[in-house]
Length: 204
Length: 314
Image (cartoon, rainbow over all chains, first blue to last red; front, side):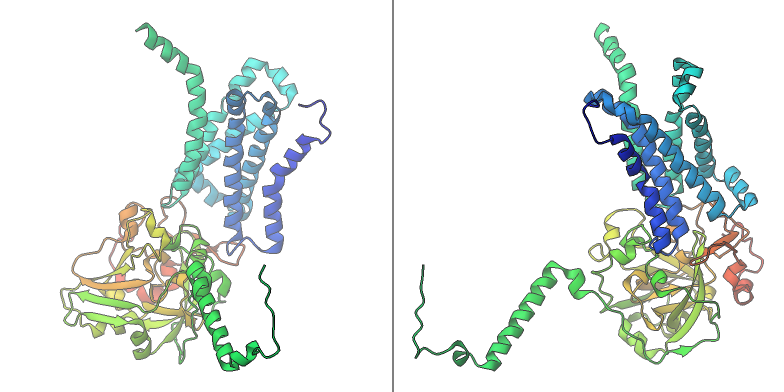
């Protein structure tokens, strides 16, 4: 696939991943983000964090199910974009929504489960982002690096729970994210344990 | 191929059809087109257009704070009957027909009956009331409502002394309210007030905003406005008012009893379990501002709750 291609795909994917951010910046300057633009920005950044997290998890699933090895080349970039949007989400929450009102923010973190969970997920993303360069993989050693990056599973679960807990009544959207996550995690569990289940059945 | 030979003595088409008939035919065509368009595109052809309300008087209860923009007031709404997104009520209310409309008033009263929206607007002096509106989600607006004091309407139905509460119900009609097709919350939306709250002069039955009739997304044709309570108490598109002796269970109490109480008075000291109520964002402003007790109406209403534990009775 790669050898003959003239158009550089990776920079193109990079730009596509930046579109949601550009869209928000465009909205800020044209005043098209509605009556409560801060809420729109915060929600949008949260949505895109979750989408990139799930997309990152979907990449190896696609490789296994479709046999497309080339998709793996985009995994790190997608993962880093998840971190990028998560970081902006947090920055807007602290710096714009609450304007560095640390007392209120701290109360939010300790009193509100959805904030506690979201904040934990975000902190756990930091070591993953820091160890994303190839040199870090070498430094840590492949096995340890892989083990560390398994953190993405609880992070994604916490992300979906964070969303589920914050909606007032209409849980349909968080449940869609939950369903996709369940499929992605289920595929991994099945791959890992499914065959041994079948083996166990056959010897019984 | 058919070839039509024209002969000079043949009548010309304008000689057969008189100009009047020809114009009539055009009208007929136009009307037919409009009708079929209405059938295909009901939203664009029949959309309800709120009219100006005549003879509105000003009220001393109005605040002189800066009004929110009409576009913000009518595009950022919580009205789950049209969908749970803030923009859904504007986007999905094109089919809504607030006229004709009747409100049934019954329960523990000596004079139960019905009143049509036109009668209500004709018989009662319409007042402008500029109130702060504080949503439970920690945002707020300043809105110029038009309407009548709820008390003046309720008195007409002569509530009995056993009547301790008033229960309000929103229209249930999934054809007009597409959000009601899904059991997001228990339909129809129900709210309630204690009798003294309902009779308080601040409590308004709103028929309009900005000098015009209410647009559908704001609760047309008639809604409650209780300015010292969180916005969800101000039930929209009311079809029934009932005098009762027991505290009604409001929709949100039923949905999440630990998060929404019957009173729902604006209170910066009692947080919603999932967010602080100490501050609010006034729509159109960048910085959050402190939330005031009873949304700034403490002087008028705090006495109603004397001796009550407002932490328990949230």
